[in-house]
Amino acid sequence: MVSAVLLGVVLLSPGFQQTDTTIAVRSGARMEVRNIEGSIHVSTWRQDAVRIRADDGGAFQVESSGAVVRVRPEQGRWRRRAEGGRERYQWNDYDDGPVHFRIQVPPYVALTLSGAESDITVSGTTANISIDTQEGAVVINGGGGRIVVNSVEDAVQISGARGRVDVSAGDGDVVLRDIVGEVSVQSIDGDVVMSGIESRSVEVSTVDGDIRYSGSIREGGRYVLSTHDGDVTLTVPPDASADVTVANFQGGFETTFPIVLRESQHQRLRFTLGAGGATVILEAFDGDVYLRRGRN
Amino acid sequence: MKENCQTELLSEYLDNELDAVRQSKVEQHLASCADCAGLLGELRNVSRQAGALSDRMPPRDLWPGIAERIGSSAPTLVPARKTVVAGRRITLSVPQLLAASVAALALGGTASVIGFRALNSESVVPLVVEDPGFAPPASFAAIAVETPYDQAIADLTAILQRDRDRLSPRTIRALEENLAVIDGAIERAREALVQDPESDYLRDHLDRTARHKLDLLRQANSIVSRS
Image (cartoon, rainbow over all chains, first blue to last red):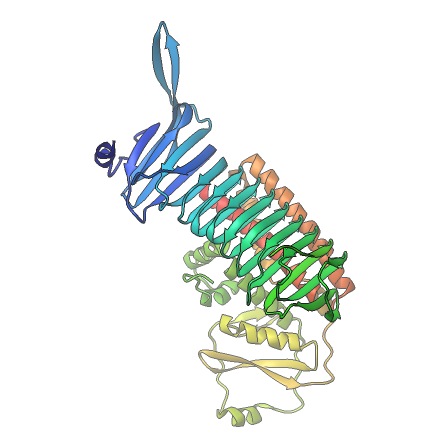
């Protein structure tokens, strides 16, 4: 199997339609998959190779230099039908239906995935991930270095990432769990829910949706949660230390921490939790702000 | 700011002084770089605010005193990058944008910009003198609810309108819904700021919400360019 893989392909000629192929890669390799309609599901294996399959006879083109593997769907599709005990395969040039990719990669392969109307899932990788989708859910479990997701419509879920996470979402909820690293989320219409976050920098802004953050507050860190229409809830350990600013235009502020207001002016309150040090800014133009005592 | 940002071209772009090729390159870059698009908006705002000022001559020629302090004998006017504003030319370059913004902000208080003089080809300084009697023009109320991103938003909206046929109907619908959400929020933020123009929070909030719109338009144009 391995020798077949290594002999398999160093450079595939463009235009060769595939439904299943395996290509040798090396450490530091990058993979780009550009789908139009369908899905991209990426999981990991222990081979120094990537395997690309398209379900249901979907065709694709592959170019590889060993360092970069590029995949894109090909218009047309193999159709299979049974005829008198035999199976007949017929290529249809005009079948441009959805292509569903199943891809296996070594964990170290960086991924650049895009799809106009594609659900995208990535599981188990430890390298950079960049995803662009117009319509389709994005689910990432893992990732390291830098994880960038741009989505116009549908939900985004990321868990277990180790590195900087940047999400730009349009219409759909964003859920982040167990992230270690800087977090930046910009959303338009949807809630942003974060739990188990270990970060020195969290910047979240949404136009229409609630924001919920549960995680640590690190000394010298900066945490900014801002929404136009929705509530903001920050749950932090009882011993959290931070200089906190709360602002809203229409709404209120509730906290389970004992606080002494340091400053109050023009829709803004300022106070210090513990010894201070970290910067926390919580803003809800039209909504309530909650600061809650969590567990250590 | 990205490494390939050529901010020095923005002023010339603003003045329509670039050739067609460079103008096209700048537009392509602006469609994908929120930092430069925002900077261009700020540059336009500063120019617009400066353009709203009336020419007021100081009671006496201040230049000899200024020149003496900075060790220069005579002013050298620079024909370099110029921005035509309301019939007069104001030399602005991006590195001086912050200084110009500060000067423009100071207009709300007790100072007025009386002109821009160049010390050399690379340096342009706004000159500010005390003028306790200065009153800001009425048009400043309207300027106050603008954001640094308005012009960039208008530019990107026009580009998107031109190329929207390259997007799928579903994507267009999603974008329009998202834009409607943002526009509603911007309107609410503007109204709030009119009610309470002194609020730093409302000012920041309006800018942040406008930034959402800029980023969405940038993303939409990026999708168009890939399709």
